[in-house]
Every structure is written in C-alpha cells, then in structure tokens.
Image (cartoon, rainbow, N blue to C red; front, side):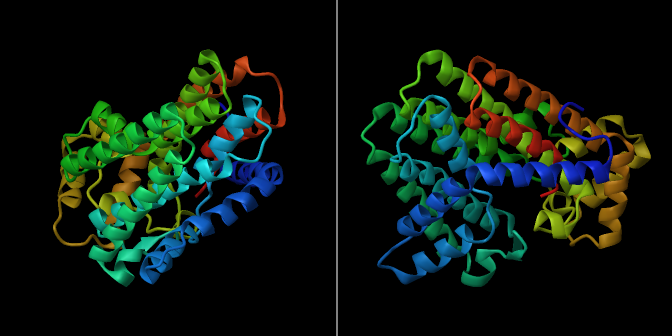
Length: 341
C-alpha cells in the first residue's frame, strides 16, 4: 500500500516519526489555535463553557484548523489573521462529536467518559447547537460571502450525513456506495471545506482552490476509512474508545460490508445474528466478528481504499511549489494511513 509500511512495528515507528515531524512544523500554529479556542468557548452560561471545554480539551488533533492554516499558507498567505477562521472548523467538529455521542448513546470519547454520560443528552445537544452557532458566527466576522457559502453548505451536508447514517443504522444491506456517501458528508466534507476556505482566504486562483478542495476530500475519506479499519484491529488504548464499537452500535462500515460480500452462508448468518442482537455483545462475540472480517479481507480492502485516496490527495499538491506547508500536508497524508489512533 502506498505510503504505508509493510509491518506493524515499522508502521508504528513510521507513525511516531511522522507525528513528531508534523508537530515540529505546526507547534506554533497549535499554540495559536488553543488560545483562540479558549476565547471562543467563553460564555455567560457556565455550563456551556464547562461542557465546551470538556469536549474541546479531551485530546483532539486539531487537524481541521491546521488544514485551513496550512492551505492558506500554501497559497501564499503570510499574515496572522486566519486563526479565528481556522478555529471555526474545530468548533463545528466538536459540535458534531457531541451530537454523535447522543445519537450513538456513546459511553467513551477519546478515552474519557462521553459528555452525555456526565451532563445528560438534553444539555449536550443544546451545547452542540451553541458550538454550531459559534462556528458560523466566526465565519460571518470575516465578511467574505464565498467563505460563508462554503462553510454553511458544509454544515448542511454534515447534518445530512448524520441522518443518512441513522437511516442505515442496523442495516446489513448497506452497500459500499451508500457507506461512501455517509463518510463523505460526515467526515470528508469538513476537511474539504477547511482546505478550500484556506485557499479562498489566501486569495488563491481557481486551480489552486480546486486542488486543495480535492486534497481535503480524499484526505478526509482516507481518514474515515482508516478509522473504520482500526475499529477491527486497534486497541482501546490506541483508539480512545471501545474496540469493536461500530459492531456494538450497529454500524455497517466498509470492512464489514466487504467481508459480507465474500462470506459464506454460515459466516453471514453469524455476523447477522451478532450485528442485529438487541442485547449488548460480549467481548468474545465481538472478537469472533472481528476475526471473520479480518480473515475475509475486509480490513485489508479498507486500508487499500484509504491508500488509493491518499495517493489522489498527494497528487493534488503537485501544482504547488515546494514549501514547508506543502511538506507538512504531504506528511499528514502519510500519517493518516500509518496512525493507530
């Protein structure tokens, strides 16, 4: 697989090397993002601030605001006025996480108790709405209609993705095309918008804007594909959530969809009975399904698809001259496939 190492130990070492190199390049930007995030989470309603800081400070990578900043820089922007706009992407992402956990009845988020298990569903939904509104308000402050159009259209598509995923919940007839539509809207579109808006903010031309939009699109798809594959082969310490979480929640992701297409009748019946069980699955049941999906090639197929999208993401950066921002965006593409969390 392009960009991925051939063995698990080598893969882990490569991921750590890339993570360290990326961090060296973006450390100052991350510090700026953190300061801006704290400002935007201030509210006269104490509970909003408490829950907002809980979800935002629970270990996120800040990938989306970084993509916006790096994209602007790749297109020649050299100022320091972009950070609040970049933070809008993290606020929007945090809002989707809060809403996701309510819909999924999640118990763990990034190795911590999910916010809804502490403050309850009503409070978490409303605070998610507040973060949505803060994100949009931030983009309005930049007084650029194209930025606002792209950002607001993205919020709509994310919501559509959530509804599509709900429709397909517990549906083993979900096919690859339907799955790809969900992850495009739920995950890839926000990264697409971050890269595209970075280009718009920097005043880039149509070719540069299109290239960065496509880079973000393919990076986002690969990111979710890798996440879904890791649910079958990762560990709770790496993922920050229970392994086999998608099986437990009745989510037919690509590893399972592909495995079902190759399964024999008995294997398909075994998967179906576990997947549709109303009772929580035992650890042993989850491990049986994970092994089946692995043996039937579902995980390998998903990683191969991720590698394909990352090749396409990298190819879109070819029009840009060499620069630190370009190197970091290329490193991010490599890291997405090698990461374990």
